[in-house]
Image (tube, rainbow, N blue to C red; front, side, top):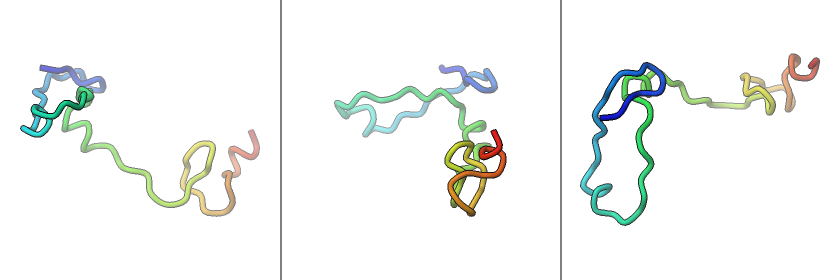
Length: 66
């Protein structure tokens, strides 16, 4: 059993047969599937400093100000 770093709920890691029988080291799962599904992947052009959605130049106005 593992404990999620975000919600502290216990969850069972599910490994595939491929993961069990390969010689590669595997990274433990640290976030439960429920919390993982809540993440939204960043897409499109973004500010290079803060990652805000921004398509007009490299930096958003806030980052240019500060």
